[in-house]
Amino acid sequence: MDKLIIQGGIKLQGEIRISGAKNAALPILAATLLADGVMTISNMPHLHDITTTMELLGRMGCELTVGEKMVIQVDSRVIREFFAPYDLVRTMRASILVLGPLLTRFGRADVSLPGGCAIGSRPVNLHLEGLAAMGANLQVEGGYIRAVANRLKGCDLVMDLVTVTGTENLMMAATMAKGVTVIRNAAREPEVVDLANCLIKMGAKIEGAGTDTIRIEGVDGLTGTEYEILPDRIETGTYLVAAAMTRGHIKLKNTQPALLEAVLAKLHDSGAELTTTESTIEIKMNKERLRAVSIHTSPYPGFPTDMQAQFTALNCIAEGTGTITESVFENRFMHVQELQRMGAQIKIEGNTAITSGVSKLKSAPLMATDLRASASLVLAGLVAEGATEVNRIYHIDRGYETIEEKLSNLGAQIRRVPG
Image (cartoon, rainbow, N blue to C red; front, side, top):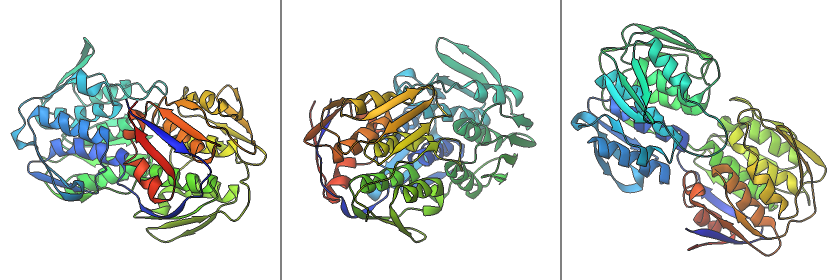
């Protein structure tokens, strides 16, 4: 099992290109199951979760071609099976996203209950309740969701909780349902909008994506098309925090500042100087030391839970006291214990982490517990005295494309070694 060795104390400087968004790419890959034709998807990030989803589609019988720069073509017209097995699904929760497309286009699906990061309860009951309301016959047995439907029927769906994958799954299912489906209390994340834009380009009739009410008028079929994935706002935010923590000066290209206004506002509060264009962000730290910030995570357009761990690491070395309240997932402070081993002063009270900044962190062997926690440990390693060892980095590979190469291009001393 690989690990990262990081020599801290180097200011990051230079330019890097941001990859396509994993959280948009995964539902759009699932949406290829809806197309009566070839889908060509560009700006696809080269990540473990992406290759797992491609393997899942291939196992169903879809024909996949990978071109230069991870341009992927998918032809689902040759699909043979409607089965998502446990050995693939167990590694990533987003695999549940094949359920809606399979059911609405082919009328049946057998999908294993999903796995993924251990960051708290993310039940699929909202997906199932929505599909049942649309007329699906569902049974959960032996760890599998077994679903059949003649043709789904449009209806009015009110989500008990804001759920990104739930919104995406039901939106895809509704594209070929009979009549009109309205999803209320829908997720507003940019990745939901990106999926909707892709579906519209395929011929779907969708209104309201990006608001809390999405209206979908079912059509008889969708066609293949070409689509480019939007940039990854969480990868963008992570490298911005890395630059701020190391008091560096970097420029990120192929990104969209409008997608992470809440993150940019907190970086500004911490003392970072930011310059943006439509597709670039430049960050420069003129102050000798960061200021601690306080954060409350919430669904988009609020502060993203996927940036909470990175800002916890930032607060560890910032001047003053910062409070970070996690309101989205109930088990997302597992990185705190590892940061404490580096000398961080953090106290957990319920769902809030209270951090008193220290002047420096010290290197230690660390154990990554989930995707974004892994990123926070890498960031801490960039500023720690000595060489920090981050173990179990397979989590990082699920969400960050060649993180060691990109950081090396910014001057960091970081290398991947066998565990």
